[in-house]
Amino acid sequence: MSKLWGGRFTKPTNQLVEEYTASILFDKELAEEDVQGSLAHVAMLGKCGIIPEEDAATIANGLRSVLTRIRAGELAFHVGDEDIHMNIEKALIAEVGPVGGKLHTGRSRNDQVATDMHLYLRKRTVELTGLLLKLQEALLGQAEANLDTILPGYTHLQRAQPILLAHHLLAYVSMLERDISRFKDSYKRVNVLPLGAGALAGTTFPIDRHFVASELGFDGVYENSLDAVSDRDFIVEFLANASLVMAHLSRLSEELVLWSSTEFGFIELDDAFCTGSSIMPQKKNPDVPELVRGKTGRVYGNLVGLLTVLKSLPLAYNKDMQEDKEGMFDTVRTLEGALQLFAPMIDTMKVRKERMRQAVNQDFSNATDIADYLVTKGLPFRQAHEVIGRLVLYGIQHDKFLLDLTLEEFRSFSELFDKDIYTVLEPEHVVNARNVYGGTARVQVEAALTRAKKTASVTAEWIAAHEG
Ligand code: ARG
Image (cartoon, rainbow, N blue to C red; front, top):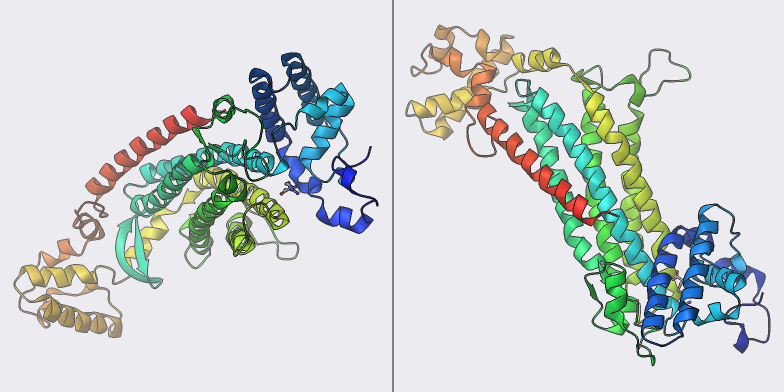
């Protein structure tokens, strides 16, 4: 069969041009959405009397059987038919005859492709939110199991102040909560219908865009036909949101890699989530977090790639915009892959509480607390800081931690020290002393955990209301 747009041409397309401009090899991923959009469009054409109702019914049946064949892998796509839209239209015409040619009435591939991508990203946004929630749940489970686990908290990767492991994990829950809220927010802009914009200016047919929108479950229609076909902001937003998800996962990955090293020994990832070495029999490598860390780059690349495609692009559709797809598909796959593995990996991770505790006992991460102790005895904080600095130096030089020092040694630095200092320096005391909203004291962490669980159940409700 010749090209759907062949009438104006006197020569066949150069073979390389045909291959270069075709998108079917990747946009076949939009087949479901393309048929979904066409079904709503043709229902509207029939309802508005733009084509006879019986033709609309024939076309709808034809589209359904084309989709069945696609799902069964029975429909061969052709590069010569350029993209998913024309491949499906060709298959439809082959199926139902020339009446199939009425489907494209009042429509352009420009508003069609935009509609397909809105449908695609709408679905993926909900699915990915579900996967983010699963990871949050895994983190919440580990947090609950580690309300008594104390480990050193770090700044500059130097031991800073002891914290509860639950508190550390809840930080990631909060980060993922922002990711979820970004997906939920961008959903509003994804859930708008471009169809009806035609090529760029609207259409001469008396179409009903709001009917199509409601058929497809969109909350509204694009206000301006040029904007409808030119807009790819919703994909940029998705890629930006995805980039932050990957930023968060890569930070967690880095900590898992560090913590599972012999040097830290804070956690052990389950065997099912690690791989070995072909030469060193002792190795157990944290490949999953390493690869997630590595794949963060391609997601950032996809974001910058699309932003660059859109820069200075005149209205309305330009072929450049076909470049919006591969990075989007790749990002969806990358996020899905990472999140699907992360939840069970966190779930099955073994926490080596005693190693964490040992680390806390053998550091100066309680130094802030004795500075604070002197402050409560009346010394200005700056002076207290100076005194404790010298005390720590003394400890380092004499190979003693703060709890190893005698009261006499303490007193040689300040008369204000008393024996209650030994209670103040205990890791539990140090942790529980930070009893402020959002702090690491156990009561605060328990309250935070309760709040996070409630937020997670709100997310679960949102997902249930938006999926399918
Ligand atoms: N394959 C095209 C894309 O993905 C569909 C829209 C083509 N429109 C056009 N006027 N060439 O962007």
